Image (cartoon, rainbow, N blue to C red; front, side, top):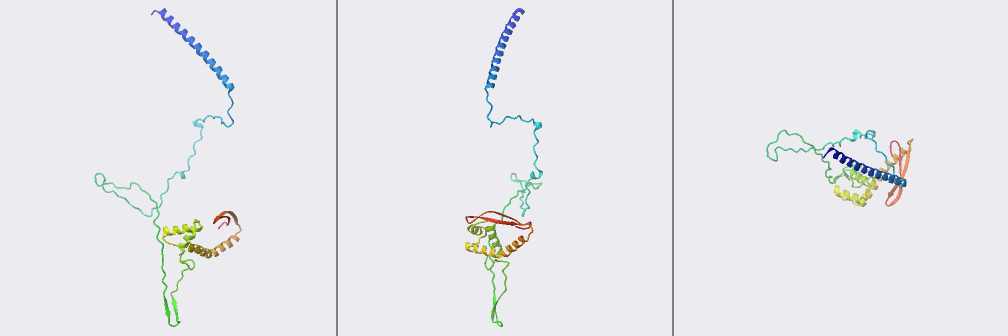
Length: 245
């Protein structure tokens, strides 16, 4: 191909490219005009649509607040009441005796011991005949620190029953189930009710003393709140001083 033919070919290609460029330019002009028409017809967004916000650059973002060091500590271990050591003397694979024995890790297991059975103490009180007084004499005993009133329930068991009834607010039948299941003692519902009445009567002097002390306090705050008892709505009144309530 001669130089003149090459120049003629290039001029033809350039002419085609210019014609294609004119076509693309015209299409772009029509598209821009259509976009402008659509922008004029566009309705504003409803009021519940939030306007888009530009994301803040990374350097303008606030640094994340670090947790307090006291929250990053691991749970403290409890003081062990007993320690069980597990030793391995020989290799379980080849039965070769191990060397360099050292503590690998510790595993903590927290559990409750089995509740002890109820303790029944039989007090045998003997008597004797006095020939001079002409009367039977019994061995002197004092049970005021062991039982509540004239009943058979000890103070520790009575305190447990009173706590289950007043603090935990368990029904009488559930208290019976608890004592039978965990302590192995069977008490009738009537005896539990009578025991609670005796405890109330025995603690009444202490309650009266607290009332007198509260009334003598220079600052007293009273409050009431709703309280439901035996299916009936009522109120409970709380009286507090700086030292008691």
